[in-house]
Image (tube, rainbow, N blue to C red):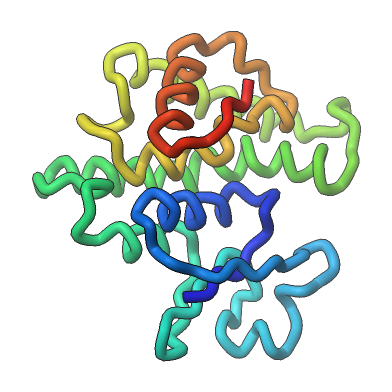
Length: 195
């Protein structure tokens, strides 16, 4: 399997972390999105959206979109709850992450880290929505160790950009339960601590 990704992208790191956690062999191919490497004719042949991450499986089949990729890679593993309702709750978090978390927390980070903008240039509405997402996570994690009943793909997906939220200008000190959860999930994945 080949993973086409950017090591600075949380969406790409989700895929890497799932592979590492499940000991799935892969070759990592660095793609620099800022240089247009995901928009070349060769890349667009297997991913017409021109986005990373993309995996090309043995046999040449390609799969894009981080949630779809990790859902596929995690099938039949302990990263997906066996109970159908718990698995659906995990999916709920995966979809929420892409719709209500990543567009704000990750986009603010993109503006500061990739584009080199100043914090004062961030869109106030994106900042507000990012804090709403972190507020939501804090409420859930005050009552539970993980986002679903057990450690799952939901935790891996949400860790990617939440652990780097400070790089997008978000103050994680306001979120003790989220900080505790970050430490727990990093330990589960064998990652060095972010904070």
